[in-house]
Image 1 (tube, rainbow, N blue to C red):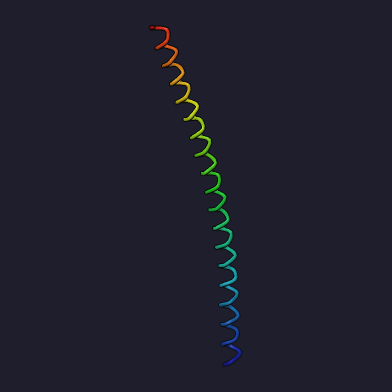
Image 2 (cartoon, rainbow, N blue to C red):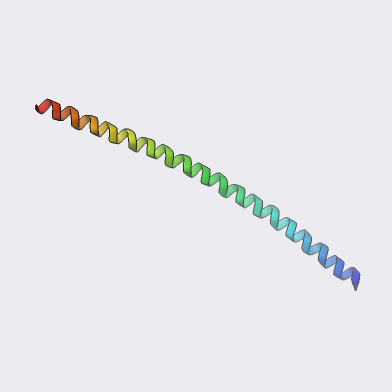
Length: 67
């Protein structure tokens, strides 16, 4: 009786440990994906900034030619 209960406790703890490892791996994967996404947003923001500056320069140059 006591041995059966101990075996169930050990089995449950083993499953908990396994689930914890799987959860840690999943969280690590999510953190890596989040970091990569943030880097891509920063790169996109930088490209948009350069594009806006380029458009502004083009508009100024065209405006100066008209004068």
